[in-house]
Structures are given as structure tokens and as C-alpha cells.
Image 1 (cartoon, rainbow, N blue to C red):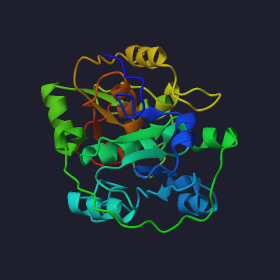
Image 2 (image 1 turned 90 degrees about the vertical axis):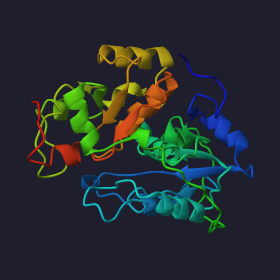
Image 3 (image 1 turned 180 degrees about the vertical axis):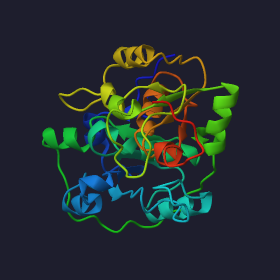
Image 4 (image 1 turned 135 degrees about the vertical axis):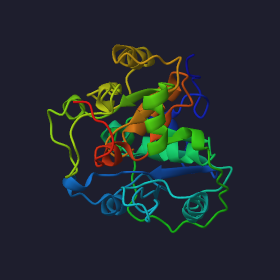
Length: 287
């Protein structure tokens, strides 16, 4: 199955040209999902306040999270999501376009989050903020406070995998697992970004670094045939169920986004990912 060509059809990507042409439409909400791992020591919110796509609001995946869970940026409950998204001025019927930094980090995570909570009118800006800036498109430095809207959220648990689900997959072999981390981290030849984690991967999992899906020239996702080929080279069978994992549940959503484009629209993301699995002593690890 292939994707439809129209924005907000089956293809979850929109171009910078499309977004520039539709900015300002009342039901179109733009979300800045920029996120940095702690070791980079960059402040995504501060950068948003300095420059962002006109009319955009900032979706902080660290703030819109389950703060009772020690793992980073775990999904919050339905009520918390409804309140947080509504406070951003996004209503139930709105179209949402998320953008972020390189490799669709973490706009794909925000895209997945909206889908997990029942909102399918969501897309990702192909090429993200880097492509937008490179093309000399306008930005804004003074975000107006959004007027709160009612956002109805309904959990779709089939799109989220937890520790119990991952253990069950190892026992039942009823789904494939694909890891978006670098080849070195997957093979335990590079150190983990977060301290205290074991090296390696979930036994039986496949590896496709999310960065392999993007063009070095403009950070746009590679053509569909090349993306399909990348999954094929990773030995993933798109005809069978799959769960994507990574370091902390962010770049795994990039693989879920790519698989959605190829017709695998039910790919789940392991929210705890390697931070949970590699941080425990009772989970098996393959080198």
C-alpha cells in the first residue's frame, strides 16, 4: 500500500510550500515540537521564543508528560492531554502540523501522541525548521497567548507498547521489534547517551537508525521507494505487526511515521524504550 498525495490524506507529511500557503487558516494549528536530549544542553523553549513559524505554539514533550513516572517524557493520561492541548489553543476539529529539528525530532513524537489520543488530523512538516529557515521563510518572535479550546482525547492503546507488551513479544513472537538508535548503540560498540544503561538491544530486534531515512541536503524524508528499501534492508516485513523502539521513545516515532507512509498504520511505539529496558536488571539484552 502506498500513500495518498494530498496533505492530511494518508501521507502524514506536508511540504514547506504547503504550510506557507495555508498559514493563518482558522482551523490550522502549527506546533513547534523542538526537543533536545539533555547532554546537548540546549533550551528548546528559549529558542522557540527567539524565532518560530508564525502563529506556532510550543509543544513541550517534557512538560506534557507523566511526571509521576521516573522515565523521561512518558505519555500522560487522557485528561492531562486534553487539558494541555486545549490550553495550546487546539480544538477537537483542528488540523495540526508539527515541526521540529533534524530528522523530524520530535515532531514525529508529537504526531504519534496526537494519534494515540484519537486525533488523526495531524501531519509533520517535511524538512522541519531547518528547511523552513533555509528557504528564507518568515518567522515570529512574539507568540500571542492562545485562546483555550476544547480538545477531546480518547486513548488508542494499540499504538503504545509498555514493558509487559515487550516481554510478551519475546515470548509469543507475535510482532517485530525495530530499533531506531544508531548501529553503534544497538551493537553496544558506542556508549549510551543516558548514564546507567546497559549496552545492546532487545533480543531479536532489528535495527534501522532513523537518520538513514533522511536526505543530507535538506533533511527531508527520502522518497517512498528508498524508505521502503531501507526497511527491507533492515529485514522488516511490513505485512506483519511491528513495534518501534529507540532510546526514550522519541526517534522510534520517526520509524512509526515512515511506516505509516508505507501503509503500516498501526505500528506501535515502545514508550519506555531503551531507557526502561536497558536500565533494568531483569530484562534480557543482546549485544
